[in-house]
Image 1: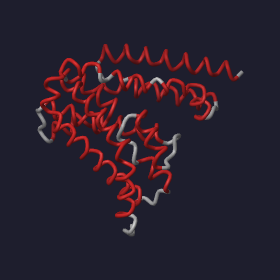
Image 2: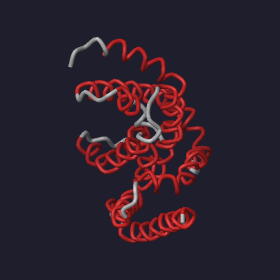
Image 3: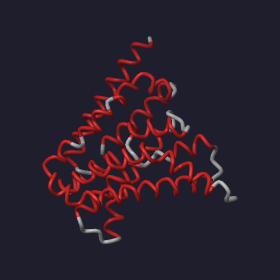
Length: 236
């Protein structure tokens, strides 16, 4: 029976993805994006079958393993714009580093304000980077492997859905800056939205996401320790 549900959930997820993708391509409506439609349909199905999310995750967790190669694949289009990237590399490094600091400090501050426990706090700290990087960081800082996909997806969805409105409100017109904003704030989902807006935005969103992920994995544990030391003494 376990093998049956494993195959069923795999087929269900893949079929829902391709159907949602066809609707999204035809309509270009952001709310019909596969990243929104497939989770909603899967949640409804799980409730109807009276299964647990842990069951669904156990049967389909190998799909998550594919995110590693997919993340690396985002770097392929970067080769076409290597000269422009070399020209703006220092700026991208600076913006990615600042995005890391803002993400860590804001997450820890708000989590402390809401009196979340340490596991939830540590898991939130890794929410602003793509899932493969977030898994590595979460293990280093003592977060929950089960929570990080949820926090990461929510972060990406919010960034993808509200990114256009925010950039319009602050009158952002530079495609390089807009791409970096999507990549740093909404990782893979931001890249998907940036690519819809303009190819150049998509390239810089991809590069920003990769740089942010590397910086977070290498330096975030030290920054997080300092953050805890600084903000831990504050009484909320």
